[in-house]
Figure (cartoon, helix red, strand yellow):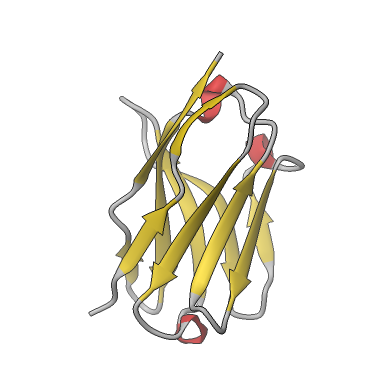
Length: 114
């Protein structure tokens, strides 16, 4: 059983920054990739950013240049640095790990006020 625990969400004004963290209960090397997804009220869950075990990174077009995904293999953690936040970034952010099966965290709320 894999556990993913997100933290770092909160309320921030537009233009501000937040850093999300995702702590995994086992070595993140065991996952093909990890990533961040988000779901706004009434909308589907969308990809934000992913990072593979070989550190290949992919971003959604809407966050390129503003968000940065990174990983700390020693801590078994993945991060999402979010800068220049916009009200449309408001959502519940979920951490995902994939190793033949998707594992999800419980989510952390990010609210950006205008």
